[in-house]
Amino acid sequence: DPYGNEPKRHAALKPASKQPFNAEPPLALLADNLITPNELFYVRNHLPVPDVDAKTYELEIFEDTMNKEKILKLNDIKKYPKHSVTATIQCAGNRRSEMIKVKAVKGLSWGQAAIGNAVWSGAKLCDVLKDMGITEETTQALHVQFEGLDTDPTNMPYGSSIQIEKALDPHGDVILAYEMNGEPIPRDHGYPLRVIVPGVVGARNVKWLGRIVLSKEESHAHWQQNDYKGFAPNVDWDTVDFTKSPAIQELPVISAICEPGEGETLKVVNGKIKLRGYAWSGGGRKIVRVDVSADGGKTWQAVDSLESDRTRHPRAWCWTLWQAEIPVHKNQSNIQLCVKAVDSQYNTQPENFENIWNLRGVLANAYHRVNVKIQ
Ligand code: MTE
Ligand code: MO
Image (cartoon, rainbow, N blue to C red; front, side, top):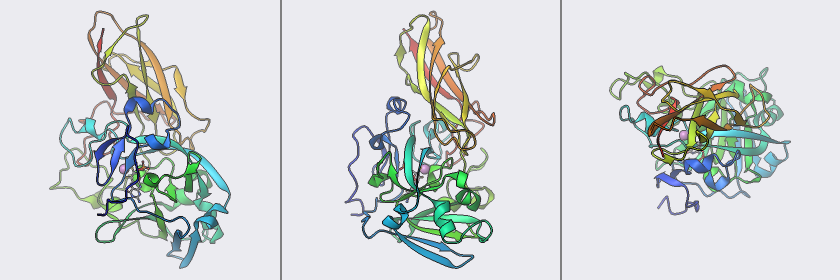
């Protein structure tokens, strides 16, 4: 049984699938902590979790255009300067369950909690590469491919790739991480080593990292070539050509209301109700504003309370938690709450899912709408 040796999971994680294990925490809990506790961090596994022995673990790095190779043990990686980065990781399919309401899509029906924020510590990939003599001046590689130690029944590992510019940029903060929130990375999240690519879609943050290949070509893996790409709403499974869209890298701006939840009945206090949630943008863009509405998006107000870390654009990898108090009229019984965020490039979110529907249900970042009753 390939799933006979899975790690223990927190009872609060709600599985979207059990084998492979995929689960998200309750949305209300997500807004409690700027740093998501390890045991409540969403889990997205495509394959069984490998059981890796840190003592015998080896990472292979191969540069194809210079024909250079290096093998590193975990202790070799720990000799490089330890760098910590607070980075939010989000699955491309986060909030897919809302897009599904427009029309069916293929993929796990994630709610709004396939996202989390953690402090990741390890060696900077650019330091390790520099040590191998791999720099912008020397390499002709265009992509950095990552392979996991998790394999499918035909022995193919999970894999994906990022662009070389991101990997070599010291301000890109790409990390070979062995710690998550000050602890060894839990098995579900990539023990003993995972690559963290801040600002970039979860799928490229490869867990149980076994091999890195610098190449003129992108990863040939399914998850780079035939998955995690966006398409126009008219493209269906009969007409889709995966070679026609680029692989998703940086994610667009997104936000969600974590509390109240859909269908809740709320008490009005001093003519106002309370909302909390998160907002985040990919590519190191900072959240500069969050707007909320209590009338389905007709009128808006900016929220006063934004909590994040002190990083700036274009290295703002950490999400923003927000809290708002919004006036409501007592004579209304059913209202629709909405949220949209604005990032440091003044990008904002699309109004509805009809315009951004795609067959894989990715990039689901329309306004988050929550219908509630007023007491
Ligand atoms: N890495 C490996 N080796 N295998 C995987 O299945 N899933 C990817 C990515 N890295 C995956 C992987 C996807 S799609 C996401 S969204 C994130 O890991 C999820 O990370 P998490 O489980 O730590 O939240
Ligand atoms: Mo994902």
